[in-house]
Length: 310
Image (cartoon, rainbow, N blue to C red; front, top):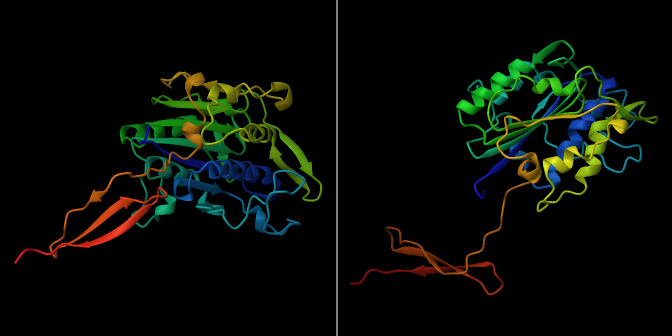
């Protein structure tokens, strides 16, 4: 467990101002995993529409998920890895499969390994077993399933938690067939995924219902929380959502009730303290460095000079 490393892939597939809520959905998940310790170096953030800089935005440079405007989701600490026209089906599949052009920068690569737990959140407009990108191309459940199979063969993940907030969301996970993938969709086949409320100052709906109630639940999470995936899925009320979220867990070895949310949402970093003196081997010049535990629990550095006899 100590070797596990967590990654997050957060995808808004929709362009245009009226899809503001999809950007807000994605940034809301981004702030959750950041709060729980996953660093930007292990988060891939894809935003198809830059609503913060849209000329229709009455609050330029800002994105909000509630009408009190308490938190600007698009603050200085947000690192967007794919934006605008870069958010395409091709780039999403390249990200999952790891098949990039040679000059692709590190921040656009999913550098996972066999010990990586990967959270994937995707939001936008979709139908039965497909989701649209940029309102002009689409990716199917089969496409995503085959990309996951490539990841599995390449030993690029340990476990995957797929979450989708979109219409007919659960159908996106229908064709998955690779092991250790668990999926949760905000709506069943034939159902829509609805917005929660309109911000009249901004002029559009600013968050979807599923993400709104998910965020309410995430407030309970800390890095040491014992809350499970079953606890999370049990939180949602079909009456509140106007849809029936569905969990697919048949490919996942562990019971959802025994799988903690922090296995995907939180950092795995731990502080380790050394209480004994460590003598490092001398280099060719006879210099060595000794490290010892200080009285306050920190590490005190002691330089020692080892001179050869004669």
